[in-house]
Image (cartoon, rainbow, N blue to C red):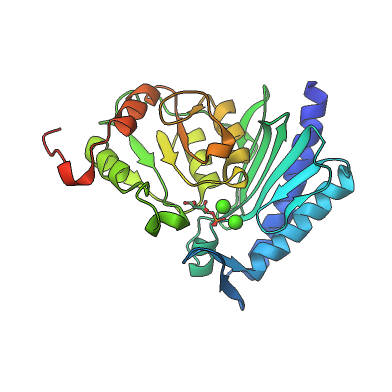
Length: 274
Ligand code: IPD
Ligand code: CA
Ligand code: CA
């Protein structure tokens, strides 16, 4: 993929995410229609749908031959294309419904299955994260890079809990306790794309989560990797976007965090002697 092509796709992703964000802002504090879908607490609103419509319009106008995977609309366009846009028009719907300001439009492009272009736009805090493979990452058009933290004791880390947490024992509760114990703090923003972007700009040092979909993380992965971060499975093996399980760090605490996650004791046998 040439630099010119990646820049072209990055501009289109930016146009789409900004359009989605503008749509979201028009519903901020003014939602009329909040519904649950699937698991309890998994919300969808008219803002999700309106933002999705404008994002898809932008992509289809510029790139009608590309495939699209969007949270509410599902799969659109060619399934044979090398290019797949993974879109979360409103990442952080629960936050948005409560006017908690961590929500974003997330637009990522996978080329041959690999995330290569990503834009995450939080229209409430007016933060625009952009990246493309080999071109670096920016926040509001200024270069960003990951933190320099090298120990868990000095780290601030982020996680989240999927909507199926009441239906599975793999609910991230024990890992959450483990990381609370080992680090300076664990945050849960409720917006995966923004979490990855927060690691990318050095506000926090590591992020892990399970139960994610490609649209939650495709764009943020590119932002983080281009800011110098590392993305793998919990056990440090190569990341598989379909697994829904991600360990994403500044690179320097990656092995420590991986070890802590895979060696997490069961809650009943919690060891307070760390
Ligand atoms: C959710 C958010 C949240 C994460 C959930 C996601 P949504 O996306 O990214 O941080 O913990 O697993 O599903 O439903 O607000 O688009
Ligand atoms: Ca999401
Ligand atoms: Ca969403």
